[in-house]
Length: 310
Image (tube, rainbow, N blue to C red; front, top):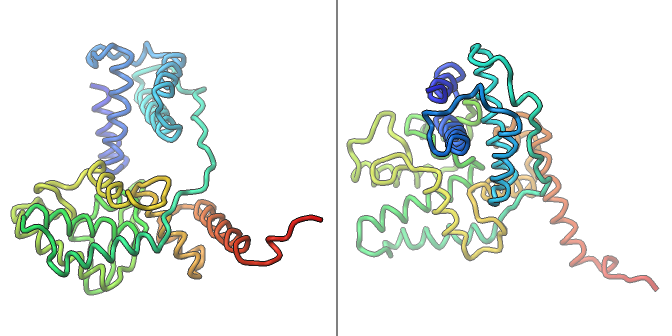
Protein backbone atom coordinates (compact mmCIF):
# COMPACT_ATOMS: atom_id res chain seq x y z
CA UNK A 1 0.00 0.00 0.00
CA UNK A 2 1.23 3.49 -0.84
CA UNK A 3 0.89 4.75 2.71
CA UNK A 4 3.11 1.93 4.00
CA UNK A 5 5.71 2.69 1.31
CA UNK A 6 5.70 6.35 2.34
CA UNK A 7 6.14 5.46 6.02
CA UNK A 8 9.13 3.23 5.18
CA UNK A 9 10.59 6.14 3.22
CA UNK A 10 10.21 8.41 6.25
CA UNK A 11 11.84 5.86 8.54
CA UNK A 12 14.62 4.42 6.40
CA UNK A 13 15.59 7.28 4.10
CA UNK A 14 14.68 10.41 6.07
CA UNK A 15 15.49 8.81 9.45
CA UNK A 16 12.38 10.18 11.13
CA UNK A 17 11.70 8.95 14.65
CA UNK A 18 9.34 6.04 15.29
CA UNK A 19 6.84 8.37 16.97
CA UNK A 20 6.85 10.75 13.99
CA UNK A 21 6.27 7.88 11.58
CA UNK A 22 3.42 6.59 13.74
CA UNK A 23 1.80 10.04 13.80
CA UNK A 24 2.01 10.38 9.99
CA UNK A 25 0.58 6.88 9.63
CA UNK A 26 -2.39 7.64 11.89
CA UNK A 27 -3.18 10.86 10.02
CA UNK A 28 -2.95 9.30 6.57
CA UNK A 29 -5.03 6.25 7.46
CA UNK A 30 -7.62 8.47 9.07
CA UNK A 31 -7.88 10.50 5.86
CA UNK A 32 -7.97 7.33 3.74
CA UNK A 33 -10.79 5.86 5.82
CA UNK A 34 -12.73 9.13 5.69
CA UNK A 35 -12.54 9.47 1.93
CA UNK A 36 -13.21 5.80 1.14
CA UNK A 37 -15.75 5.02 3.85
CA UNK A 38 -13.40 2.90 5.99
CA UNK A 39 -12.06 0.93 3.01
CA UNK A 40 -8.34 1.65 2.95
CA UNK A 41 -7.82 -0.77 0.07
CA UNK A 42 -9.94 1.49 -2.18
CA UNK A 43 -7.81 4.58 -1.55
CA UNK A 44 -6.75 6.11 -4.91
CA UNK A 45 -4.51 9.18 -4.44
CA UNK A 46 -4.95 10.30 -8.06
CA UNK A 47 -8.65 10.88 -7.39
CA UNK A 48 -8.07 13.14 -4.36
CA UNK A 49 -8.71 16.85 -4.84
CA UNK A 50 -7.87 19.92 -2.79
CA UNK A 51 -11.57 20.23 -2.00
CA UNK A 52 -11.54 16.72 -0.52
CA UNK A 53 -8.66 17.59 1.79
CA UNK A 54 -10.24 20.87 2.86
CA UNK A 55 -13.56 19.11 3.53
CA UNK A 56 -11.79 16.52 5.71
CA UNK A 57 -9.98 19.17 7.75
CA UNK A 58 -13.22 21.13 8.11
CA UNK A 59 -15.01 18.04 9.41
CA UNK A 60 -12.28 17.52 11.99
CA UNK A 61 -12.52 21.17 13.06
CA UNK A 62 -16.25 20.78 13.60
CA UNK A 63 -15.52 17.76 15.81
CA UNK A 64 -13.33 19.95 18.01
CA UNK A 65 -9.86 18.95 16.79
CA UNK A 66 -7.42 21.67 17.86
CA UNK A 67 -5.69 23.99 15.35
CA UNK A 68 -2.34 22.44 16.28
CA UNK A 69 -3.56 18.93 15.48
CA UNK A 70 -5.22 20.13 12.27
CA UNK A 71 -1.95 21.71 11.20
CA UNK A 72 -0.04 18.47 11.81
CA UNK A 73 -2.60 16.45 9.86
CA UNK A 74 -2.38 18.90 6.97
CA UNK A 75 1.41 18.60 7.04
CA UNK A 76 1.12 14.79 6.96
CA UNK A 77 -1.14 14.93 3.90
CA UNK A 78 1.09 17.45 2.14
CA UNK A 79 4.25 15.43 2.76
CA UNK A 80 2.54 12.27 1.47
CA UNK A 81 1.43 13.82 -1.82
CA UNK A 82 4.81 15.50 -2.37
CA UNK A 83 6.36 12.05 -2.02
CA UNK A 84 3.90 10.55 -4.54
CA UNK A 85 4.67 13.37 -7.00
CA UNK A 86 8.44 12.81 -6.72
CA UNK A 87 7.92 9.08 -7.25
CA UNK A 88 5.89 9.72 -10.41
CA UNK A 89 2.84 8.02 -8.92
CA UNK A 90 0.71 11.15 -9.44
CA UNK A 91 1.13 13.96 -11.97
CA UNK A 92 -0.46 16.79 -10.00
CA UNK A 93 -0.26 17.61 -6.31
CA UNK A 94 -3.65 18.44 -4.74
CA UNK A 95 -1.92 20.01 -1.73
CA UNK A 96 0.02 22.57 -3.78
CA UNK A 97 -2.36 25.36 -2.73
CA UNK A 98 -3.22 23.94 0.69
CA UNK A 99 -2.91 26.55 3.42
CA UNK A 100 -1.93 25.22 6.82
CA UNK A 101 -4.23 26.18 9.70
CA UNK A 102 -2.79 29.09 11.67
CA UNK A 103 -1.88 28.56 15.30
CA UNK A 104 -3.01 30.97 18.00
CA UNK A 105 -0.05 32.87 19.45
CA UNK A 106 -0.79 32.17 23.08
CA UNK A 107 1.84 32.28 25.77
CA UNK A 108 2.86 28.78 26.86
CA UNK A 109 1.23 27.30 29.93
CA UNK A 110 3.45 26.64 32.87
CA UNK A 111 3.06 25.42 36.42
CA UNK A 112 4.23 27.40 39.42
CA UNK A 113 7.58 25.99 40.51
CA UNK A 114 6.47 25.77 44.13
CA UNK A 115 3.59 23.53 43.08
CA UNK A 116 5.67 21.04 41.12
CA UNK A 117 8.42 21.09 43.77
CA UNK A 118 5.81 20.29 46.41
CA UNK A 119 4.43 17.37 44.36
CA UNK A 120 7.89 15.89 43.82
CA UNK A 121 8.86 16.33 47.49
CA UNK A 122 5.71 14.62 48.76
CA UNK A 123 6.16 11.72 46.33
CA UNK A 124 9.79 11.31 47.36
CA UNK A 125 8.87 11.19 51.05
CA UNK A 126 6.34 8.44 50.32
CA UNK A 127 8.90 6.42 48.34
CA UNK A 128 11.76 6.90 50.83
CA UNK A 129 9.60 5.96 53.79
CA UNK A 130 8.31 2.94 51.88
CA UNK A 131 4.82 4.31 52.55
CA UNK A 132 3.34 2.52 49.54
CA UNK A 133 0.78 -0.25 49.62
CA UNK A 134 2.66 -3.54 49.85
CA UNK A 135 1.93 -4.35 46.24
CA UNK A 136 4.52 -4.80 43.51
CA UNK A 137 2.43 -2.95 40.94
CA UNK A 138 1.90 0.05 43.25
CA UNK A 139 5.62 0.34 43.98
CA UNK A 140 6.48 0.15 40.30
CA UNK A 141 3.85 2.75 39.35
CA UNK A 142 4.85 5.19 42.11
CA UNK A 143 8.57 5.16 41.33
CA UNK A 144 8.02 5.32 37.55
CA UNK A 145 5.50 8.18 37.83
CA UNK A 146 7.83 10.17 40.07
CA UNK A 147 10.69 9.71 37.60
CA UNK A 148 8.53 10.83 34.66
CA UNK A 149 7.59 14.08 36.39
CA UNK A 150 11.11 14.70 37.60
CA UNK A 151 12.74 14.19 34.19
CA UNK A 152 10.23 16.36 32.32
CA UNK A 153 10.56 19.16 34.86
CA UNK A 154 14.32 18.89 35.53
CA UNK A 155 15.45 18.56 31.90
CA UNK A 156 12.75 20.33 29.87
CA UNK A 157 12.12 17.29 27.68
CA UNK A 158 9.42 16.82 25.10
CA UNK A 159 7.20 13.81 25.74
CA UNK A 160 8.56 11.95 22.69
CA UNK A 161 12.14 12.64 23.80
CA UNK A 162 11.46 11.13 27.22
CA UNK A 163 9.88 8.03 25.71
CA UNK A 164 12.81 7.51 23.33
CA UNK A 165 15.50 7.39 26.05
CA UNK A 166 17.26 4.05 26.44
CA UNK A 167 19.83 2.99 29.02
CA UNK A 168 22.66 3.46 26.53
CA UNK A 169 21.81 7.19 26.32
CA UNK A 170 22.53 7.71 30.02
CA UNK A 171 26.09 8.29 31.25
CA UNK A 172 26.34 8.16 35.03
CA UNK A 173 30.10 8.81 34.95
CA UNK A 174 29.74 12.13 33.11
CA UNK A 175 26.30 12.99 34.54
CA UNK A 176 24.62 13.50 31.20
CA UNK A 177 21.93 12.10 28.92
CA UNK A 178 21.83 12.03 25.13
CA UNK A 179 18.45 13.26 23.93
CA UNK A 180 17.05 12.52 20.47
CA UNK A 181 14.79 15.40 19.46
CA UNK A 182 12.81 16.44 16.41
CA UNK A 183 14.11 15.21 13.05
CA UNK A 184 16.38 12.84 15.01
CA UNK A 185 18.67 15.71 16.07
CA UNK A 186 20.65 14.80 19.16
CA UNK A 187 21.86 16.90 22.05
CA UNK A 188 23.58 16.24 25.37
CA UNK A 189 22.08 17.61 28.58
CA UNK A 190 23.59 17.59 32.08
CA UNK A 191 21.75 15.67 34.77
CA UNK A 192 21.72 16.56 38.48
CA UNK A 193 23.07 13.94 40.87
CA UNK A 194 19.73 13.39 42.61
CA UNK A 195 18.03 12.62 39.29
CA UNK A 196 20.76 10.12 38.38
CA UNK A 197 20.12 8.38 41.71
CA UNK A 198 16.41 8.19 40.97
CA UNK A 199 17.07 6.85 37.48
CA UNK A 200 19.30 4.12 38.96
CA UNK A 201 16.64 3.29 41.56
CA UNK A 202 14.04 2.83 38.82
CA UNK A 203 16.40 0.79 36.61
CA UNK A 204 17.09 -1.62 39.48
CA UNK A 205 13.37 -2.15 40.06
CA UNK A 206 12.61 -2.37 36.34
CA UNK A 207 15.29 -4.99 35.75
CA UNK A 208 14.06 -7.11 38.64
CA UNK A 209 10.55 -7.08 37.16
CA UNK A 210 11.41 -7.30 33.47
CA UNK A 211 14.84 -9.00 33.07
CA UNK A 212 14.19 -9.95 29.43
CA UNK A 213 13.75 -6.43 28.04
CA UNK A 214 14.68 -5.68 24.43
CA UNK A 215 18.11 -4.23 23.63
CA UNK A 216 18.83 -1.33 23.83
CA UNK A 217 16.84 -1.36 27.04
CA UNK A 218 14.18 1.40 27.05
CA UNK A 219 14.38 3.47 30.20
CA UNK A 220 10.66 3.73 30.88
CA UNK A 221 8.51 0.64 30.45
CA UNK A 222 5.01 -0.46 31.41
CA UNK A 223 4.37 -4.20 31.62
CA UNK A 224 7.70 -4.87 29.92
CA UNK A 225 7.08 -2.59 26.92
CA UNK A 226 8.30 0.92 26.18
CA UNK A 227 5.89 3.45 27.66
CA UNK A 228 3.43 5.08 25.25
CA UNK A 229 2.60 8.80 24.76
CA UNK A 230 -0.88 8.35 26.24
CA UNK A 231 0.55 6.63 29.35
CA UNK A 232 2.98 9.51 29.94
CA UNK A 233 0.15 12.02 29.48
CA UNK A 234 -2.05 10.17 31.99
CA UNK A 235 0.71 10.17 34.62
CA UNK A 236 1.30 13.91 34.27
CA UNK A 237 -2.38 14.85 34.17
CA UNK A 238 -3.07 12.83 37.31
CA UNK A 239 -0.09 14.32 39.18
CA UNK A 240 -0.98 17.90 38.27
CA UNK A 241 -4.69 17.56 39.02
CA UNK A 242 -4.50 19.74 42.13
CA UNK A 243 -2.37 22.52 40.64
CA UNK A 244 -3.44 25.89 39.26
CA UNK A 245 -2.14 25.07 35.75
CA UNK A 246 -4.69 25.61 32.98
CA UNK A 247 -3.25 22.74 30.94
CA UNK A 248 -1.99 19.74 32.86
CA UNK A 249 0.25 18.16 30.23
CA UNK A 250 3.85 17.01 29.74
CA UNK A 251 4.50 20.10 27.62
CA UNK A 252 3.44 22.35 30.49
CA UNK A 253 6.35 20.90 32.50
CA UNK A 254 8.70 21.76 29.63
CA UNK A 255 7.42 25.33 29.74
CA UNK A 256 7.86 25.37 33.51
CA UNK A 257 11.48 24.28 33.13
CA UNK A 258 12.24 27.07 30.63
CA UNK A 259 10.52 29.76 32.67
CA UNK A 260 12.25 28.69 35.88
CA UNK A 261 15.66 28.72 34.18
CA UNK A 262 15.18 32.23 32.81
CA UNK A 263 13.73 33.57 36.05
CA UNK A 264 16.77 32.31 37.93
CA UNK A 265 19.21 34.03 35.57
CA UNK A 266 20.07 31.44 32.88
CA UNK A 267 20.97 33.06 29.56
CA UNK A 268 18.63 32.60 26.64
CA UNK A 269 21.10 30.68 24.49
CA UNK A 270 21.73 28.08 27.21
CA UNK A 271 17.99 27.51 27.57
CA UNK A 272 17.74 27.19 23.78
CA UNK A 273 20.36 24.43 23.77
CA UNK A 274 18.69 22.66 26.68
CA UNK A 275 15.32 22.66 24.91
CA UNK A 276 16.76 21.64 21.55
CA UNK A 277 15.28 24.61 19.70
CA UNK A 278 16.60 25.24 16.20
CA UNK A 279 16.07 28.99 16.50
CA UNK A 280 16.60 31.44 19.35
CA UNK A 281 13.34 33.10 18.34
CA UNK A 282 11.44 29.99 19.49
CA UNK A 283 13.02 30.23 22.94
CA UNK A 284 12.34 33.95 23.26
CA UNK A 285 8.64 33.36 23.87
CA UNK A 286 9.57 32.37 27.42
CA UNK A 287 10.94 35.85 28.06
CA UNK A 288 7.35 37.06 27.66
CA UNK A 289 6.28 34.76 30.49
CA UNK A 290 9.04 36.11 32.70
CA UNK A 291 8.00 39.67 31.89
CA UNK A 292 4.37 38.85 32.67
CA UNK A 293 5.40 37.53 36.06
CA UNK A 294 7.49 40.65 36.69
CA UNK A 295 4.52 42.87 35.81
CA UNK A 296 2.22 40.89 38.10
CA UNK A 297 4.69 41.17 40.97
CA UNK A 298 5.10 44.90 40.38
CA UNK A 299 1.37 45.56 40.33
CA UNK A 300 0.94 43.64 43.56
CA UNK A 301 3.83 45.22 45.44
CA UNK A 302 4.82 48.71 44.28
CA UNK A 303 2.86 51.64 45.77
CA UNK A 304 2.81 53.62 42.51
CA UNK A 305 1.15 50.73 40.66
CA UNK A 306 -1.90 51.19 42.90
CA UNK A 307 -2.33 54.88 42.23
CA UNK A 308 -5.47 55.95 40.40
CA UNK A 309 -6.13 59.12 38.42
CA UNK A 310 -7.60 62.12 40.22
